[in-house]
Image (cartoon, rainbow, N blue to C red; front, top):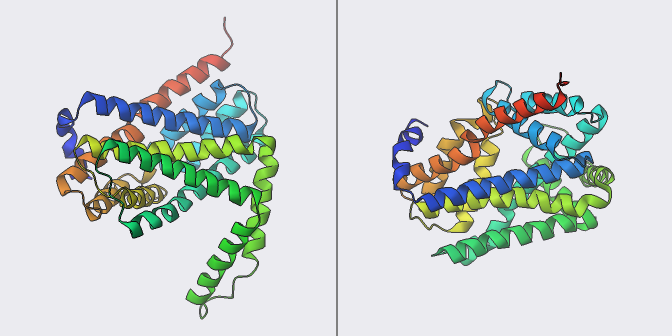
Length: 304
């Protein structure tokens, strides 16, 4: 983490155009998350969604307890804005389930590219890789929401692996496929006819975030195998869930730098690209959260 922070001065070597591109991609990432929560909460107004998500996300990155504290703040702000408390709990739960399921599914998309040895050499190929991830992930999500077959297969496979690994230490796991189908049906019940929009917003949220990392790598002149970068990206998102530090601070930087190095990025480029990516995905949302909270307080405070 110290090495990553120490690379801040090297940002002057990155073209302002690349920095602007990363800013736009992160803005698109946030917009997709707002659209997703708007569908799951069934709220038509954008302002309560935007301000509460920015504020909750910011406090989750700095406060002990991370995500739980952020979720509590977003809940309070949405209720203060007039959204029913029960709807807030259900909607945010479904949004979190969809985003987590999507990031867990993304490494699967990298397997064919790894086998084929796909190595993009320019920005066009990088862009195509991002578009391919978006299309494949959207297709996989739509299949899981519309058909029982993929969830039954996934449930049986996970259940079989788990029972083999822990056959001497725990009771056999049963009924996982049926449980997955029940959770899927609960998500569809919450989303109603808006499930397609919610799915596209979920996929867009991770795709634009992934493209931000690819842009950071391209900005430092590194073009590693995009499929391996995808695996590094997914590992970083899972590390961010570790509750030992807010937002996975330190764990994400160390893990992402190490994974990028394994993907073929030089140590110096990996450190600089990680810092550039985290600048836009972790640090810049902090002041945005403060602005969101101030806008929210002004909106709910009676004038005069």
